[in-house]
Length: 374
Ligand code: AMP
Image (cartoon, rainbow, N blue to C red; front, side, top):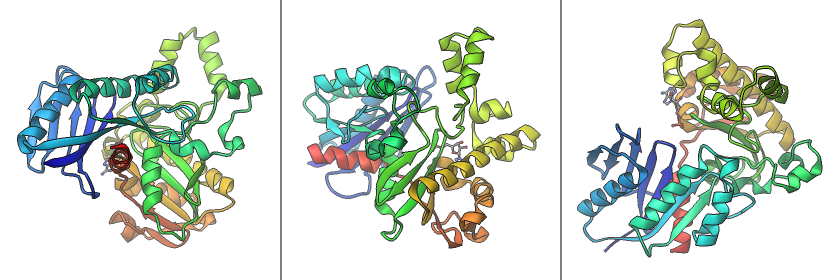
């Protein structure tokens, strides 16, 4: 019997999968189905490459994953399936999926309309595909439930906090992994998860004490297509003076803003870095300035900083972005060794505050949580 744990990370048009053995940190297989729809395509490393075209839905993707895995391991025995779920409300720990939990998570969909419904669709598809196999929900919010009240609230009348208008924070699976592999002497760390979605987290003694993302996955840093922090007066202006509807504003803030909106060229950092256009450089400049400001703000929330850690597609791969962010932080003792920065670390600091590049591994956190219930 090949006893294993499957992890699923369902996005709007993608499904990231990994198969882990019952014990150990190295996956047996990893894969990604992207552009799910008419052009959907699944690539699985088993470790030899297995490709499946015409992935039209998340359900089809999961079936194709099962077909490929059982072809490779005819004796495959799944002991649990772990799912990334963006919003877990006030839950502090990951949890086995039950009908009651599903109802609770569906009620949170309005808090994360662009992510939660897709996560739940992935769970439904997996429950159909693997009846009887324990399924576990792993929440991006859970890691941040250690926020002190001041970092958890907005300055609105208190009733809104009680109604759930809080700074939940996201990317918690990534922060959980990164903090688990950091040197023990780093007690006050800012972790910068910079990818298509981007946020930063102040982690003191392994616990999240503040995060740039707040109530939704829109706040804080600018992202591929999301605005990041915005003066709320802009929203009032858009509604009152430009008569934009909630749906139009949602589309603007989630899909047309960020690096894409600023550059008018692309949401993809690689494309912007390769471009000679002034707008591309300005978009990167805005991104890195906001990042530098947040590092300083989060350091203040911890009373100082011992380490700055970069992860995510941009954080792990873009020497230019790291250089531009750190260029504004020398006064805090954050300076880069450029040769190490170009080599992508792991240590890239030139002394003082340690600066690291740590490839994140959300799948491993999900696999471990799923094993915990199997
Ligand atoms: P993620 O959402 O974590 O997969 O990150 C996606 C982002 O990482 C995109 O903006 C990519 O352009 C960016 N990225 C990936 N590789 C590189 C690279 N070598 N240089 C700059 N940006 C990169």
